[in-house]
Image (cartoon, rainbow, N blue to C red; front, side, top):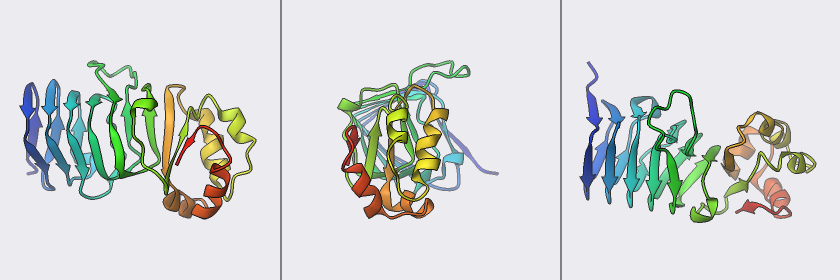
Length: 204
């Protein structure tokens, strides 16, 4: 039987928290981590993110962490390392979110690889983003009409840009890893770079 490990209703300071494979982990409700090193080795299906605050922590994905929804967690002054694909950060108001504590500010992703990651309802000026070959499109939903007029290589336009109409207005940034998204959508990182360099509102 797979054990369940709960971090809830307490404050932890200055510890290294290892989340190795072989267990199901629950973060929250009502957990605060301060100056901790959170090392994640499990897939997101074994990681239940209920609610909590992470302050001045390092969050390290030991292997590619896919589709984690961090929008019930509040990050301040945290440093992310490793590969994050399809992750959501920030505050996303959802009908089933009874804690309403999510958010992100003053965090550093410069040592992380982000691909198909979304940021919700946050001030991106406080976020240090990864540089090329990662790139971030700021205010993508608000700028959807402008971005659809751009001639994108491969299937990037039909899949990513045309899909902005289905994104929530609270999405304030989208970050991709150019080699990965290019391979999926029939283009190259170099072709994407040539288009992105001509646009405003892109961090790369």
